[in-house]
Length: 609
Image 1 (cartoon, rainbow, N blue to C red):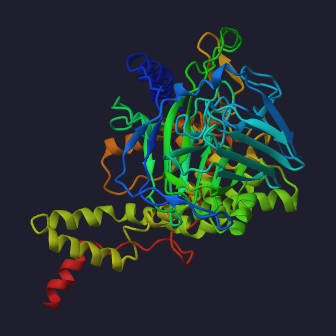
Image 2: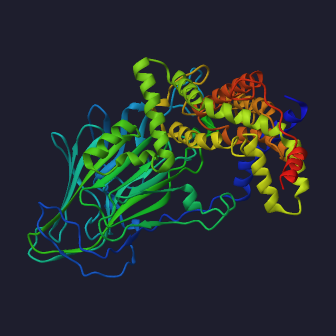
Image 3: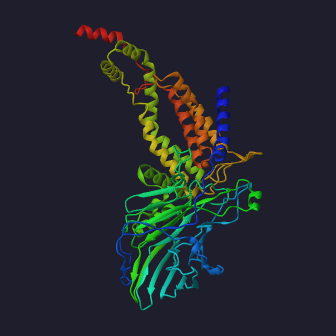
């Protein structure tokens, strides 16, 4: 690496260290109101279950927003009581305040990965979902009409929990939660009118969980909500709520996201972080949903003193399903059923559940679309190598990279040779350009004839790169969400799903991650070995040579697995470049035939005329 490269590298790191703290200081995030809760009035009749009696729905009305302040839920000063039930996979904690699931702990997944050298931010807690959320799962919000003071009675059953609430007007509300396998909970909520008069139920929001960061130092980059309408998914994250101009400048924050057609097109909704998700699947679909960004409890002074990297203003995303109002006649009832999934984003499990329920639940992995196909194929290949050959995930990533390189070897080899031939033909092509500079159409025609005669193509160097782009983006997407890599060790990296930090700069708390640095060095090496494209401006060539330094900045805090893949890819490309330079430049193995001078071609053409 020359002197200029070192200077540019240092400058990139300085900018990288000061950019985000500077932006946070100049443009602090605006607070989001928490004192109100908005309900969307539905336009169709209430969703009823086949086993429930029919309920008379309220007349259809245009969508509107109805305020129902959460301050009304004061629980009449009744202390909160918790009830815990568990199976082999999860521990579910229920609360009397709202009569739902307060949070879920995953018994086989730690909150943070223990490294060889314990670092700040590591905890002994279990991974949990709906953590510190203001509302329990399947809490119903509509003021006091259906909740009273919001305090439920909890009863432990043989396979789950029942939450009950009796109101003085004769309304009886019961929620049944039945624990199942594969991180599932079968839930039903039933309204019964046990009075002698009709009861009017207003529109309601049914809380389906909140996406929260994993641990005290998680900045919430992967915290988001997603929903599926039977055709496609849509994901909403912090960036959507921030509404930044050009992705980085402050904008007008959004406070609420609304979706749904008012019928039953909400097939499922899910909140998730990088590796875990809480999904709610209504049996008959839901008419609408609403999502809001919420403030989570700030860390205590002791937590901040113990770990300066603790996020001081943690944020989450809370989602709810919105149902229309209904009128219950005496002795009538309405029931809605749900299946809840609270567990890891593990593709095989989610794919099986998607087939079982016919709802493509595996799309919560983010494997939809064109690049998602490659992400799934790469994930299955990596797991196959790990399971059947018994190799580590680090070795599996290296093996997949080698296999991909071997598959594309003929194309990249032909590309390199084509670029060399194009470089050798530049003098003749420049003569053509000069000869027909006043007639661009004829110039292009003559250039194409010349390249065809000499068996070169301007696309020869681009096509192999274009074909590899889907593989790269598929690898990028797969490595960002593959829970199999969480805690997988390789060399000095204690967790391939996170940066391979080995040290922090004293006073700055800036992480030292070796793999991205090695990746950058190999990219610089490769860029200096690659022959320049014909006709490219010299200044542009210099910029392309130093472009790898920017990739170090962009990928410095991404997963070590991605840096490992790219480093091996660069080393294989360097090896291929050296092999290609040693070999012949023609497909027959013979030295390249000198191109026919263009001046002779012109002479022959004139004689024929």
